[in-house]
Length: 420
Image 1 (tube, rainbow, N blue to C red):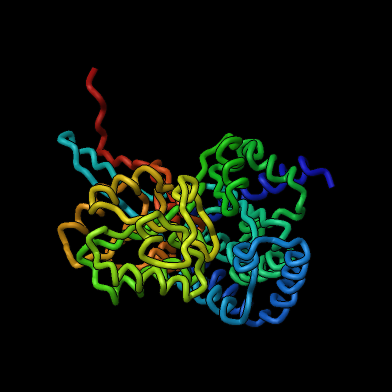
Image 2 (cartoon, rainbow, N blue to C red):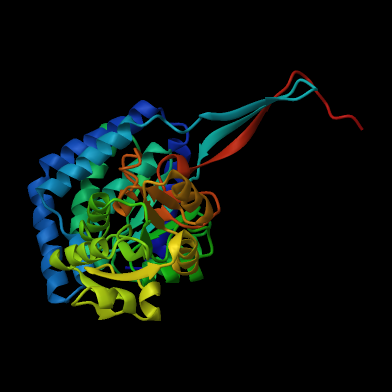
């Protein structure tokens, strides 16, 4: 296979499809997505067979547990994929939405209107569900997409992609609207980073730190991405023990390998010692390794010593670092110093403290009395997400259909000319 030629052809076909999708009726886009959801359910056995093939290879390669968890599909997860696709289909069509209108003194009416970005490239590892989520989100927002899944999810992604193609056919839409790079050769990623002769408009990497770092450092086109998910939970002095236990355990242990999992727990020093012991012990009993500062270790047996590197680490595993802090000010200072600006949560009954936390911390997603694992496009009502963006240009937080659009200005006049 000639990688350069293959990728150039993918880009050309995507650009041609994007021009069609930009003016496609929403009924056709939604029909394609709903049909794909139905086909995915019908083909679930074949998808699971393909996924088992990927899992076997991943286990033989001794991939980390977090990646194995992201790779794994089962009937429940396939049903969730289909549910997510139907939710995307049900979303309002963002294309053509008039965001704002202004009337100028000279009679000009200026509209700001949502338009598709064009062609989106998605580079991902392990997560076969991204094939469906990204394909549907891009289609709904009027964009063509080129998907480059990882070698570890190659067969799963192919099986899901075929369902998306059948959905496109059922709605008479170009099958090149959603393309899957047909090779696992890493040279294909290099071609995407170059922009495919200006046929790619934006890149979205989803995967490990090395992948995301490479895309951010080498891409010649805009990138929506986050490098780390160093997420914090702060238990305030006015937090109740019951709520803190539920939120912290869910934030860390529901799925430790996702980017929204809590990695550092901060606890106000004035919170009762008994509460601290119960909270830390509950994490240990749930199978979580605790790395803690000296004050915590004096109070709770079985904790390892945390050092400076722990506050900077995204474990993606059943490991958490814990520190006692001197109130809200120190918690905010610690988070702003070590956070990757992904997701942070405060547990407190004090609304003033919560308001300060939400205002003074510079992260994409901030929660009050809720688990960090809600950092997800589906939970935000977006149906799904193409990724989490922690940058400050264009998109931030879960990237859904609205974030996959840009806008243009449409100016309506009645013969006005600009004076000399």
